[in-house]
Amino acid sequence: MDRLDNSGRGPLAVVVIAWGLVGMGATPLWAGNEPVPIPRVIPPNLPKLHSAAAYNVRGNDYLNQGEFLKAMADLNEALRLDPQYVWAWNNRGIAHLGLRQMKKALADYHQATKLDPKFAFPYNNRAVVYNLRGEHEKAAAECTKAIELEPGYVLAHNNRGIARAELRRIDEAIADFEEVLRLEPDFGEARPDRIATFPSAEDNARRIAKADEALARDPADADALVDRAVAHALAQRLPQAIADLREAKRLRAAAASARAAREEGVDQEAAGVRPSPAGERWRKGRCCKKRCGRLVFRIRCLILGHRASKKLFGKCLW
Image 1 (tube, helix red, strand yellow):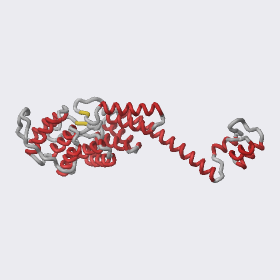
Image 2 (tube, rainbow, N blue to C red):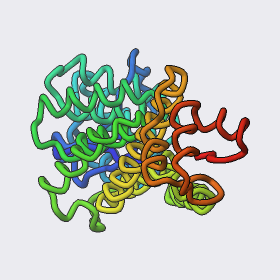
Image 3 (tube, rainbow, N blue to C red):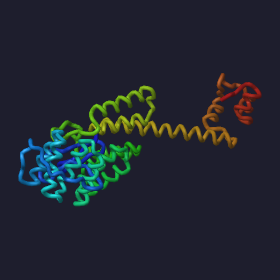
Image 4 (spheres, one colour):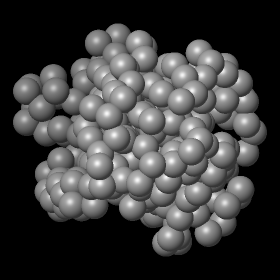
C-alpha cells in the first residue's frame, strides 16, 4: 500500500502512510496542478472552531481515522480562513486521495509546493499518486526531491524503492529498502499513528496471491518475484521484499548468462568455431548415444562438425 505522511517524518511511494498528528504543521502527503476551489459550507454536525490551525489539526485527526469527508470539510475551512496555509493544502490532498480524487490530490500537492518549494512532504505524497497511476519515473523523481529536502525521510525512501522496483531497477530498490531499515529498524511493525490507505490490504493480498500462482507455475519467474516484492513493500514487510528482489536479481542474471551462452554458441557455430561446451564434450569423448572410443570418429567430428558427422556416419552427435 502506498503511504502518506502528515507528521513531518518520511512518506512512502505506493504505500500510503498517514503519520499521526499533523498539529500546526504535520500533514499527510499528496499534490497537483491547479488549486481546487474552497467551499464555504461547514457541515452542521461539525462544531465551529476559531482558527485555520485548529481546523487543520482536527482535519488531520479525521484523516488518521479514515473520515475523509469530515477531514475535507475542516481542511476546506482552514484554507478559507488562511489560503496560504501550506499544511492544510498538503492534508487536503490526502483527503482527496482517500476519496479517490487523484487529480484534485495532485492539484493540492502542487499548490503546497508552489507556496513552499522546500516543503518535503507534498513531493513524497505526489509520488504516491504517480505510483498509483503507474508513472513510476515521476514518482522516483518526486521522492528524490523529498529526500534532498529532508535527508533521512523514511517514507520517501520506501516510496522510491517501490517505484524503482516497478521499473525493474532492482539494485536501486534494494538500496532504498535497506536504507529504510537502517533509518528505522522497526519500520514494518504496526503503529497506531499510521494509516494504510492505498492500495487496500485486500488488493495487496490479491497481488501477492497472483505472484505466488505465477511462481508455482514457473519458479524462475523473476517478474513475479518483483511483483511480490512490491506488494510486500507496500505492506511495509521490507525484509521479505528485499529477499524477493535479491532472488529476482539472481534469476535475471542467470537467465542473461544462459542467453549470452546460447548466442555465443550460435555465433561460434556460424563462424565455424566449435562452441566450448561441445569442445569439452569432444575432449571427453562423449556423444549423444555412447562414448566414442575410436579416434577416427573423434577426428571426423572435429573436422566436419558434429552435424555433418552425424549425417555422414550416423555417429557422434554431441
